[in-house]
Length: 638
Image (cartoon, rainbow, N blue to C red; front, side, top):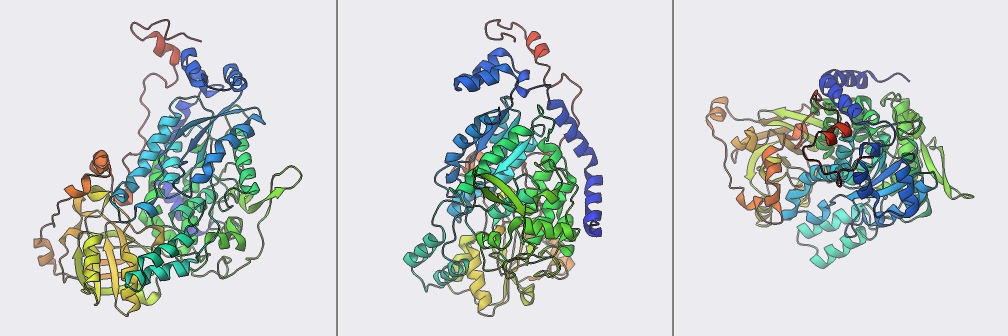
């Protein structure tokens, strides 16, 4: 199947735009490789420290320098349902790699916070920055240079992007991503949304709200709606970083464990010691990134990935922007309806045909690049399958994905999609550039022209709502919510209130330099407005009563203010000090001061630069010999 012309055009533009930084990245990748096992770069003292506490047989394998060592980097904690299942995985992985003549070590843990727990709380202001902190923690885990491949255990919002950014900075190592799976379905998403709206109206008690939430979030595994966590899992499949169909198998089941075994053994088989070396920096290339964009758009995935995919690409020396999202969205049809874009959850999606069906449909329509390399060492067509238990050996076998969807209310073919576009649009004008997710917004609500009501916080908005001051047509302009201001928290507290006003017949919209994430719903919202106010963005010029036009059809984000009046205004000011102290926020001052714009991924790191012409990274002998006063007892050479 020929590649769709829009996909081809966007890909060619990304390749051309990225040429200098991608070339520098690949040079760094090659410089980091060593001959034989990676730990050959270590001195004997270094190596002895690295296996001191290891079991005798594994220690012997590491000493012999002939068998690969696989790192385990995990986001396990037992407070968060999505990550609790990872408690069991290291033991499974270690046993699995021993079966194929390798060893595995738990290299390090990374932080994992939940936006669902921190929603509306000061801790949410650490959330976005936790992604880069996770990338840093991944780098620390791998910095011992003991490893020939790595398994990355993660699921949720910032965790998988952070792990992948960290992995790409060790792009010479093969990487396999290992999910934990979604929890079993509980209270339906429709009922959950209903009780939230009733509570916002004062028609449900806190006890009734908590009971509904507890029935929705009730066990181990990922939340089952299609937010950022499950968008992450979809992307790992489309990018070829998971074993096929691994994303949505529930935790603590025989198939889940068998997939973990297979993932571990696959990682051990694709190191530089094999004839099938697949470093992650080669797997994640420009075509892989375009496939990720297409997969996100075809499924109505999280708007958070208009930040995260930009950051992931940057880590691999690839430059993408919101124009790329916008052009692809116009060409990529919507093939799924998963909450909040429909009523079904990801378990229902998986049962209807799942990722294998989705990838095949997109490939057959020419919307994905088939000629990419995945962790299977094959093209993407090999991922048009779903896993099953092989009863005799309890291993995994893969069968072709079903030819027909089991539920066309949830999953459809590319020939008969839910919508002809991906439901994510770029809006721009004198207020800056912003992203709108309209896949769940009815067409009649996609254009709003109304007076601005300006707020500096969610709390300020909610006070006005509860006081009955918002029963009118308006555009809520929520400012000082960008990464420089307060870490760019998600603004879900607004969703039920705005939905109630819209249901009551009011024309409402939201414009903000903050985030709404994968739970963005039926109210039009222009989010991630860039540049943000603290970077000189024009959102700070808006005043109460200005007529604001938000139009998803024409891509317009405008304050309809006379030019002379607009130019005479000065930026609004706000004291952000209260947002910079408490709940650890003072520790993240360096992130706020160095973070890039939202359209640049809101990152604290830059693109790769050309490798310096200095001593090679692994010229360990020369480095040790040149150390002045090196102590022979502490720097014993192999």
